[in-house]
Length: 271
Image (cartoon, rainbow, N blue to C red; front, side, top):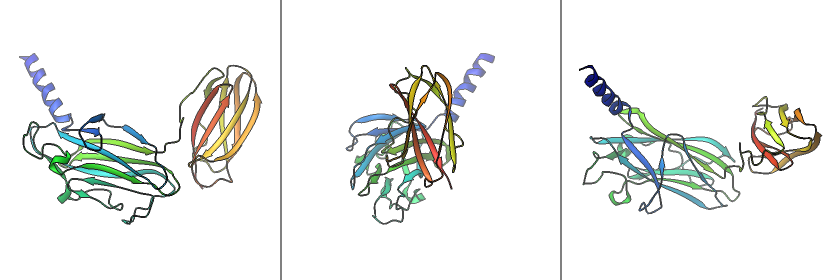
């Protein structure tokens, strides 16, 4: 009898804490699923000047009852600043959810624009948000004449249970190579830069497998080189620093190169 009770409890837990819906990335016509979106999933897109980027999604109800969903958009990073005043001045981003395409100054849908999905297995619309039943979920990004770097987060959640949610990220023109060790033949390790954020001197430690010239490059969020230096360093642990007091506030990328090794770190300057 005890074993039966345990199984019932487990089944109840799965029903209680499992997600009631699934999100899929599709092609623009929603005829082909290209990715399954899970919590923390990141998508990347490379935009060009004065061009539009479009991401199309399909939401499917997995529960045995009708489910109402809402969305929250959060701008995590923007350079240059997005124009989110409801106009069509670029750069800006907006989304379509439920039956409505919202202007750029709207970050969440109202109750009249929830995506309402019928129970799993329904044969009448709406059982998902495919284009056929007029409930698309689409995100748009309109680039300015000069391309920038942007990081936008979307959270889709069950209105009756906000913890029943899927949050994913959309990154536009993400700086290449962040956190990737392209080759570690010369560089064994590099610490994070510190202090971070900073408005003065920045430091980091570097462990080399052999004596080498070490090149330090600092790029701003648009990819422009703002600082570079090359110094000869010995095998083992080395400490390096540079002055960032003259740079404007914002996100920067510090690239450390030695031999065939290259590692990039993030730096935030705050004044």
